[in-house]
Image 1 (cartoon, rainbow, N blue to C red):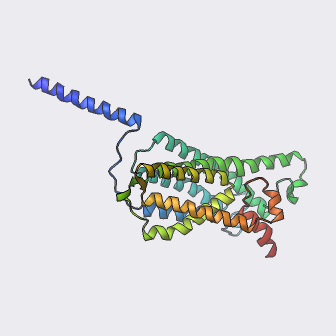
Image 2: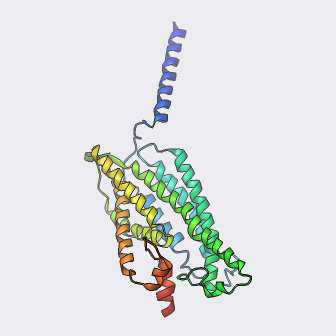
Length: 304
């Protein structure tokens, strides 16, 4: 009798485990029972380290005796720290999602993010040294005075390859996973309308610096199309979830409002430089969004 009961109990346990496994495979797992509070610590860490380690990289200027041109600069070390801290914070953000999100997709995004940011680290480091030698960001590679007279001429192709790694491939492998992780996290930030909590005061205080950094990311990284696609995808998810009686929680609202404010800043930036003939020449095409550092070397640095 006792043996029969044990067998029945083990059979029930195995059936429950198999049904739980099938639910996980089908993506029908119930939501985690986590506290739906505002993640002030993570949003604050992301904002502060983005401003210091990413935006602050090209600004920090130390004597060349400390960091000679044939050695990594202070900004390069900032970039190295950024490449470690940012993926860690993104993983912690995903961990706090109320929903069980696809781990394989998240890990693949983080791996690609680190690889793209590392490619950009090398290209941006050399580019910074070129600027110290007279390279002008508002001009193309072949039009720069310090580049166009190089001998042999094949060296110019090498610098164009470096520019491609820095400004195109590195940015795509860096920013596509970054925005994709934020979007994946956003899809899990929905709750019943009656359970929704507004963005707290601390979130509103972080909103402006967060959106301002995203504006810098979009304009300097030349990823306007990627940002617009991510924002449209977020709007689509909001509309779809609203029809199901769900709305973003405080973290989802903070991320959504940050992107809305970023879009407004990008529109104002483009409108401000709409009739600039030099920047128009460098940034042709339908999406005309000049880089802030190109504006700096063209209109600010020349007047100093």
